[in-house]
Image (tube, rainbow, N blue to C red):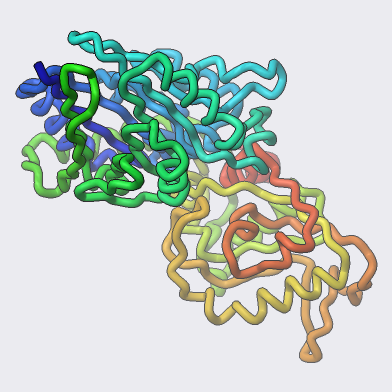
Length: 457
């Protein structure tokens, strides 16, 4: 007799708790009313995002509690789990998880072993003795994972051996891929032995799946706006005879009266936990408006310049989402002002390259002032005004560092942000800079440490 298997999947939830109640009811209803032989539930990474105060306050453990409540069968990690946590925080993130973390390409740099919280694969045996091999891989950020004492392996180093093993032992192979749509398609072309690739990372949505080289690609977009569903049919020889994917728009699901209270409660809980941690006592309000008295960006420039031990510093005003008011400043105030997953970066470059970088910034200044900025760790709305500390320019395009004309061959140290390396506006940073991203502290933590020292409670 044939065998039917249903898989529900989520990806890139990014702590969008506002969608969680409806997602939870959908999954529970699908599980309760399931008429298929088997039912499995997978998450494909970036479930957490420190932009939500509860996630930040609990280092992502609140997200794991929610996944636990739905009895996921397995999950892999995204960069928000992998790079949004310190080495220790990631090692402990899944300590109380009731599901397995499938991740084949993240290794501890010190021991050389696979991350202690992960398994390279999982083999599930159905009631009809079909063996399903589940793999998990995350995007290999080779520049940044080592900064957190992880050794991230490339896909071509990892996948062949895993597929070879599961091909021998399993009837069905499923890849939980936090690699992005381009890599998923490349994998499908190269590894037709994989039956299903459940994708994420690039926030792509395949409403009815995509068939590439006989491999079914599935993906449910971003933020829990969609929920994915995959249906497999196998014959008596345990061969797949049909496979399809669909997605359900979360906004089309019924919203219950109690949902808002639950959503607001999670926000309040996070803000309350962060508010308990007092950071500084500032003598006057620091405005997010750079044209008003005591602009907060000026304190921010001092903070990153000192932290990076730099000659000069650069920040953009769009980073600061609110002012800091006179009096006690808490972690909650800092989180509301700087919710970004962005780090300070120390960049060393010669004077002629500093000149070119400043020219790039001046050329793009008017464009970026009101430019809607998305991604690369940024959680605001617009890029904003570029503000310098220790850099000036005259009307003949001569650049000065701390009042001294720039020397073309002299090396200078700049305090920047990794965000400026990743966006496409300032190519000189990547081309000419010796860049040291100062993990693991986010910008708000660096700023908080500075305020704590300058304005102690």
